[in-house]
Image (cartoon, rainbow, N blue to C red; front, side, top):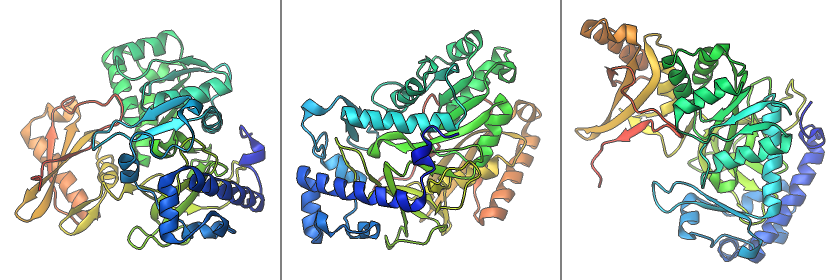
Length: 433
């Protein structure tokens, strides 16, 4: 049974009518209250009353990340600060941070979306939930907190870091559910192993992971190592944080909370709509957000949408797990390569750990990729000949599957820095122009 079956199982025709109503409200709200959007609309010659059908969304301008940076901190805020009850922000590692103000109503909507996400993962009142997402300006920790509180679970707000303590509390408090990034889940499992604790023997039964791309292979690795069901939460700071879409028992795509987010998938080159079922760039418009409405925000995430009937009974449209980001795409020997593709292939190799870094350098006029991946201890201890054998095995596997030549370097176990939040998978050592 869904958390909110009235919405999550609403007939498609009713849902589309609801979305149109909220889209028209949001467009008018943004036009009247945010000078940036009024200017963008006027430049395109479109007004709120031009939106009569869902398809009319194609008339509206896009919003991109630089628009949020250029209007830092509150140039896109549609309400006075006296109506804002919280502000979150991205880390700002590639420029000014992305800010996200929330009204009380926005917080209520966020809590509702997160409750659906966690409920769908099987979390119920009485569960003891270890929330190991980072607390603070990052939306992860406090976003999950909203959903955990809404359901009425026991929350253990550990935040990220202090991994030894994470394991101790997990064991002592008999934690049944874990929320963190997938890479940090593996870090926790490694720490437990070093302490002589087999997480598979603890009461922990489910994890809800997100905030970074992870492949089906990584999901399987986590499930086998931790003895849990690994579920997903997808979201982004720009449109409100986690809770945009979520796994169900079927794990055949992520259900989008369509009463709050209108999704499009477009051709990333032409920005024209593409049919359901085809891969393209994911674009979102918020439908009920008041402090900072987002109109056609280009996520740069690559996925596909489909509305096939789901065995869980939900009618919400589904999206595939993110297969890559247009701004993370590498071009190696003329071939487009996403880090997730390399991860998936590394997970096919039993001799290595799921810990890796992709190093991009210039080789002449072309980009060259070196894959640094940790060997399993029993492989590394055999010596250089075994390392060379496994390196060639991986190189041949990548060449055979992706058609590119890469350099593979096996490194000592535990050498690659562990993540307490989002894992850093790409090290760009190309000269800065």
